Structures are given as structure tokens and as C-alpha cells.
Amino acid sequence: MILIVDDRPENLFSLKTLLQLHRFEVDTAASGEEALRKILRHDYALIILDVQMPGMDGYEVAENITGYSKSRDIPILFLSAVNIDKRFITRGYESGGVDYITKPFDPELLLLKVKTFYRLSEQQKALNEAHATLEQKVAERTAELVRTNEALEASNAELQQYAYLASHDLQEPLRKIMTFSSLVAERFLSDRPEAGTYVKRIIASSERMRNLINDLLEYSRISGNTQFMPTDLNQLLQEALSDLEVAIREKEVQVHSSNLPTADVIPGQIRQLFQNLLSNAIKFTRLGVRPQIEVRGEKVSSLSLDAQPAAGGNYLRLSVTDNGIGFNEAYLQKIFVLFQRLNGREEYAGTGLGLAIVKKIVDRHHGLVGARSREGEGACFIVVLPLQQQSPPAISR
Amino acid sequence: MAQTITFLLVDDDIDDTFLFREVLNDVAPHIHLRTAANGQEAIETLNTLHTEGSPLPDLIFLDLNMPRMDGKQCLGLLKESQVLHQIPVIMYTTSSHSRDIEETMQKGAISFITKPSHVSDLKAILGSLAANVRHNLRPTLRTLSETQNTFIVC
Image 1 (tube, each protein chain N blue to C red):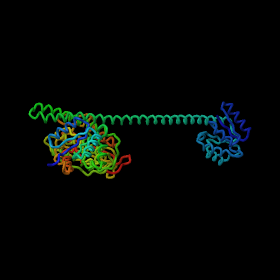
Image 2: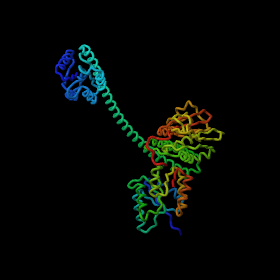
Image 3: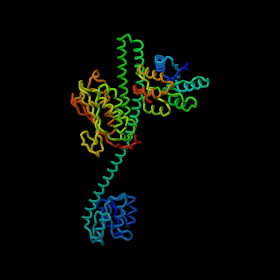
Image 4: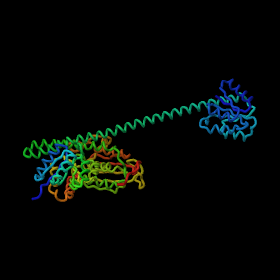
């Protein structure tokens, strides 16, 4: 519908008749005040506005119209017989008009303009509606995603709890099997070597299962609700090394480490990460070669395995390099996956979870992990971590 | 003659109680072992001993997860008691959870031992404790934790 605003009834009548002849729906207002009232109540596609009116003039009406969010997009056509000077026309555009027509006007040209602006206005309206619908859909989808996410988080937490309890409850009977087997061996089998061997195998198997359950337990714990805190990584590395002290001494491993910075980490998890990477390096040594491990840490500028070192970088690149048996990089994708083993269980002990745990810890810290190696030439594991984490850090350790 | 040394084991697990008794009997047959199946029974036993004027145990081994009254509650009551708070308590449990360790150590346990899987480990632990129970236990526990660091915290 088109709204015509003019204080003269004869002008209103003639324009109304012209537009109605061309099948436009038309409404009229005899003053600026009446026009504003009507605009608040109805939806118009176009407003034709007389400039010279008693009381509120056309410019004021236009400024008011463009001030309402409801009517902001309605095109306004000024129509004036008196104010035909350039400065009036300019003011018409400034106050929000899309065109300024001076009288006397050619009815056909006016009609063409009306048709064009009417169409544009309808299109704008359709666009606005589509936009609103889209926004609503986005909002609905977002709400749905949030709900799904919450449900997922809940079921994930439940699953972790379940895994934790299951692992803990699995440990118990296993421990009994081991203790009673060792009691039998000690009490009754000291002079029966064959039976003693069998029992030893029972114990060894149980031990393997216990390690597996422990690792699974560790794995299921990683995504739990834990906090990042600024931590001296040197200390975590030392703790991991001291846990591995026996193995390091047995294999006469030489460990070198550079000074590591402080970073926002979950301390228990990064200690575990060091421990897993170091124990791999200790495990996969080459026969006849004195095992050497180098732990390095340097600040880098971006979250990438090959990032350039940068003193003021926001990321930390840790590397654990050994001179052991290495592996074929063709298997690189496989080694971080749960239960993947590249080497036979008979040659090298392990559960196949160590690097999967490392990967999960790195993910939890929003970092990257990778490795470089060639068979027989040692391996280098690389971890890149952000020095600062988003969540507010807790009390310093 | 020196008074008999007594340990009190508070544990609802009959297998573990059996093993504990067997091993203690192997390494320190002179030590008398009392048992209680949960925290409440332990407190009652100790109170009865005190009322009778009988000697209290020299060392308490306390499981965590038990029916009726668990290890943490029991530890709390022991440490609040005028009479019982001076008996050293060692947590003896399947847990190795840092939260459990911190909480019980804070409440006054002198050590936290995760139940070992090998009889030989249990022998080593009980052997050292038995030999030093009337002395200061802490150095013993520290030595033990150095050799068996997966089991013992002090």
C-alpha cells in the first residue's frame, strides 16, 4: 500500500485516483502528524510526501520516519510545487528521501518512478523477512546444537566415570590373582621349577593386563575436569625422569635436557606426556649402541611442527630425540592411535596406549604432536603447545 | 619382657585380611594382629580396649572403601579422639588416587600404602614396619618409599 501525505484534499484526490487507476492500494494523510500515526499502525511500501505543510513539514516527517526501525526502509518520494530550489531538493535527500519530484509533474514519469520504488520496497521487505527467518533458524539451530552438545558432554562424562569405575573394579580381582599366585609360588613351588614357571607366566600375564587397565584408566582420565596452571616444565621433566630412574640406570641411558620455560599446563598430564615419550625412548634402544636421549624446548612463533624459533613466541616446541631403533615414517599416522603397535610384544613390552595418551594430552592442551624418524636411525617426537591457555589459570604451583 | 606389639587392620576384604595375616606371620610372628571389618567396628574395638584398660594397638592399617563407616570417616574420628589420636595410622587401600592421598595425609595419616600385587612387596613393607614400629616410623617409611615408590607415600 502507498501512503500519500498532503495537506490539500484536491492534491490527495488527484494522486490517489491516478495510482488507483493503476491498481495500487492507496491510503492518505492530510498532515505530517496523521502520517506518522498511520505509519505506526500500517505497513506501507512507499510514501509520497508533500514538502510544504502547516505544522510538521515534509522534511520533519521524513526524519521521523527514518528514525523508527519499523519504517526505516520505506522509500520516501518528495513532491513539491513550491520548494523547487536546489537546496530544498538537497535537504529532501538528506532527510531520507529517495527522490524529489517537482510540480508540475508528468503523470507517466511519476508512475514509472512509483512502480520502480514500489518494487524495490517489496524486494527489500522480502529480503528483510528472509533475513529474519534465517536469523531465527540460525538461533534455533544454535540452541539445538547447544542442547546436543550438553547432552554429549553429559554422556561423555558418564562414560569416563564408567571407564574409571570399570577399570578400578577390574584391577581388584587381578591384584588378587597376582598376590595369591605369588603366594603359591613362594610357599609351595620353590622345589618344583616347572610349576613355578607356569605360575610366573600367570603373574606376567596379569601384570600385562594390569598395565593395560592402568593405561586405559589414564586415557579415560585425560579429558576430565582439570585446570591449567602456570607450571615450570623443568620440574615436571625431573619428576618424570626420577620415575624412570631404575630403567635409565639399567640401560645406562644418557639424558640431556635444555632449560624449559613455564607454561599453562595440566601438570599431571604433562608429567605423563614426558614419561611416555621418555619411556618409549628408553624402551626402543638399538643393540650395541649406548642409548642417548635429548629433551629440548624452544619458543616458536606459531602452532606448527616446523615453526621458526622466536624468543617472544607464544608457543613452546618440545622435542624428545633418541638414537634407538626408530621407525618407518610410513607408519606415522598409526603410532598415535589406540592399541597400535609397530613392534612385536615379545621384543618390546607395552600396551599400545603410550602415544595415544600423549596425543590425547596434547589435544587437551590445544597443541600439536608429530614425529620424525627413519628405521635404525633414532626417532624424534615433537610436541608444540601454547604457552598460555584460554581458561583462567589457577594458583601457581 | 617387652610388651606385645599389636597391629590393627581395618579392612572389609577377607582375602586381603588373610594375606596380611599370613605375611605378617611370616615376617614378624611375634606381632599380634587384630582385625575389624569396617570403621565403626574399629572405633568400637578401640573404645572397648581403652575402657578395659588394655593396651591400644601400636599401628593401625586403614582401608578406604568399606561399608558402614569408610576409612576417611574413621580416620577423622580417630584424629579427633583425645585417646586414640596418637596411634599412628597408615592408609592401606587399592586406591592410588592423588586426591585420596592428599586428603588422608592432611587428616593425619602418616603414610599411604597402595595394596601391593606381589607377596614379596607386602613382605618387605611389613618386615620393615614390624622392625621399627616402636621407634620413629617416618624414616622407615621414607626408606621404603625409595625402594618401593609405586606403593608408598610419606
